[in-house]
Image 1 (tube, helix red, strand yellow):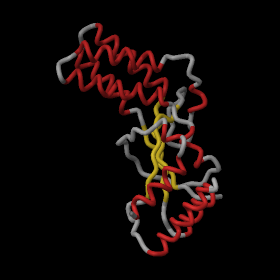
Image 2 (image 1 turned 180 degrees about the vertical axis):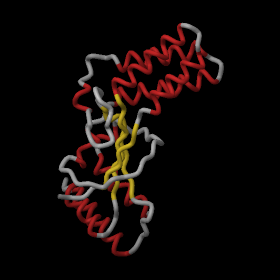
Image 3 (image 1 turned 60 degrees about the horizontal axis):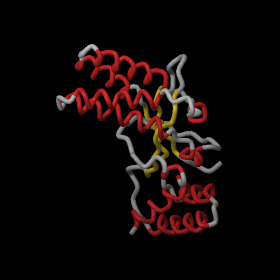
Image 4 (image 1 turned 135 degrees about the vertical axis):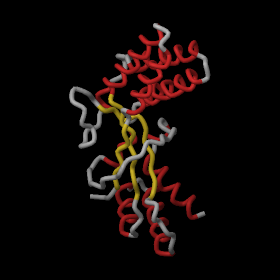
Length: 208
């Protein structure tokens, strides 16, 4: 019940963004808490098309290791098509911080999740804070809900998965070229490079 109450809060804070970015990634990094005015709305700015492209990259690598280069090639071609789609306004998904340090590239948000710090321990006081936060969420007061959680020492974390758009496009294009030359091991390394370029930006959410 306690975990369910907390999950309800997170779902409400992140809605509707997580409805379009429900797939959680396993990338990890050290978190650097800071305060911004846009953090609560961050999940509304998820490039789902980029997430789908990355998923195709991952599945293509699996297909290569399973000895199915034809399937891998189809997946990589689909990823390239998604990444090259000019109908997508990629600029609205761009995020910048000290981790996005590649020059001449743009990091786009492709996934988001919420969580609490690993040292969370339930207590009557925290349960009351969760109840207050839920009531405020019912009224649309996300800022007040997060403040109640903060005052109860419940650390709410926002995790945004960031993909370098240009680098990923180049890696996928290189994999296409190598597959055309039947260099499947090298193509796998190019796809791995696309995966390795993705970073996770973790931020502690606090009300201003």
